[in-house]
Image 1 (tube, rainbow, N blue to C red):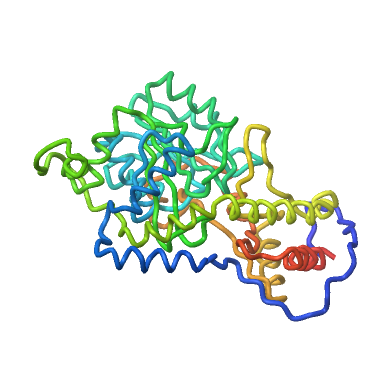
Image 2: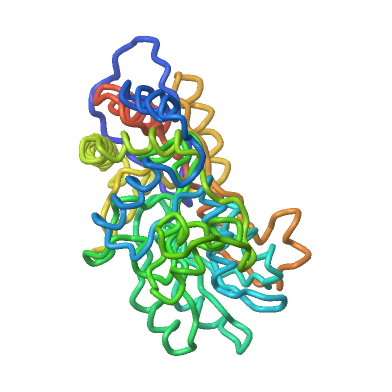
Length: 396
C-alpha cells in the first residue's frame, strides 16, 4: 500500500463505483458544428490567408474583453513566444530567468536569440515560479523574466513586477494555460509587457494548432505588427495608413490561416458556456478528492487568494515518482487515461551541460509527482466520480 513517509493512510469510503467497463480519454476536443460551418464559410469567401475577417474578429474580441493593447493571432504559442523574444531585443549573452517546470517552447524562443537561460525553482506548494528564487538570479546581464501560469493558476505577479521595475526588466507571461483566468482581478496575459496564449486542442478554446501574442505596452505595438507580417509594414498598408508596403525590419510568417481563425471565433462565441462547464468539472474533481487529501493520500491543487480557477486542467500530487507511476498504471487498467507532465528542463539531455548545477528541488518534486486527470468539455459528472472512486481504490 502506498504510504507517505511511514504513516499509514486511512482511506474514507464513499461507496463502491459501479462495476461497469468505462474508458475515459485524457482529452476529447469539443468540436461544435458551428466551427466546421465557419471554416466552410471562410473558405467560400475566397480568402483564407492570414489577417482576414475572422483573424480581425478574434483579435478584437481579446482586446475588448481582456484589455490587451494589441492582440495578434499566431500559428502557435511557440511562435508568440518567439515574437516576444524578438520584441524584447534579446541578444547574444543576455540572461532570461524562467521556470524549469514548463514546456520546451518557453526556453527555445529565447535560446534562438542567443540568450543565457537561468532556471528558477517553483514555490514549494504551487508549481509556479518562486519570486524569491528569481531575485537571487538577477545580474547586470538579466534582460527579462518569463513566468508560466501553470494550469491557469496565476503566478504571484506583484513581487515579480516589483523586481522587474527595480532592475528595469521586461516581463513575459506564458499564459498558454491561462485564458480567462485572473490575478487580483486582472486578466492573465495583460500584466507583463507581453502575454502568450495557446489554442492547441488540449486547451480551453482551440483551433487545432494556434496561439496569440498580447502586446500590453504601446512602445512595442507597431514593431509587433511588422514582425508578425514577415518584417513588412503590410498591416499599416491594409489599414490605408501608407500607400505601399515594403521590408522594414526582421520578422517571419507568424500569421495563421483565416480558416483557423474562423474556427477559433466560434469557440470564442461559446466561451462563457465552455468556461462554465470546465470550471464545474474542476470543482467536482476538487470536492470528490477532498476526502483523499484529508486522509493524507494525495494533494489537490492549491489556489491562492490572488488567483482564480479557469478549468484548464485538474491534477493531483502523489508522494513519489513510484507512487505516481503506479497510480497512472492503476487508472489505465481501469480505463482511465491519466498522464504525468513536464520533465524539468534543467535536467534534460539538451540543457544539462548548460545548467549551472543548482538543484531545483521543488521543480523536480512536481515533475515526479503530478498526475493530470482526464479533463475536457464533455466530461460527465458520473465519469469524474468514477475517476475519483478508482483513485480511492488505489489507496485502499
